[in-house]
Image (tube, rainbow, N blue to C red; front, top):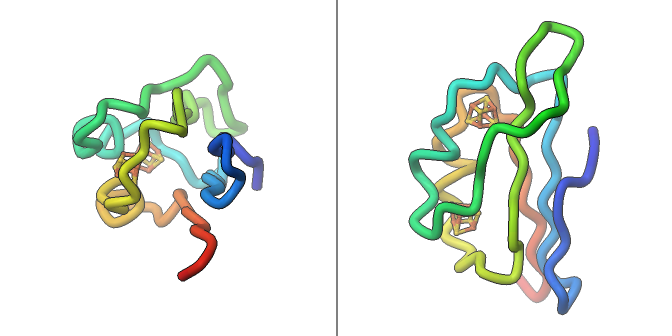
Length: 80
Ligand code: SF4
Ligand code: SF4
């Protein structure tokens, strides 16, 4: 696993299992804040791994992790 984002308060951490990502783009399409994109990192299966931009804008809806068919996205939120 690799950490792909931490918000400035450090109470929300986004982790993606890079080897699970299949570049399907569901996380990109589902995020209401348009925070996900397919990045330049390519995993061993040849897929561009999703990445998150501007973690501070996340509203913690979990749509991205819910929609990912590979369960590749984990969001750890403090004080839950
Ligand atoms: S939790 Fe919601 S707002 Fe945050 S990155 Fe995922 S889909 Fe976007
Ligand atoms: S939804 Fe999951 S498998 Fe699809 S691009 Fe996003 S992280 Fe990768």
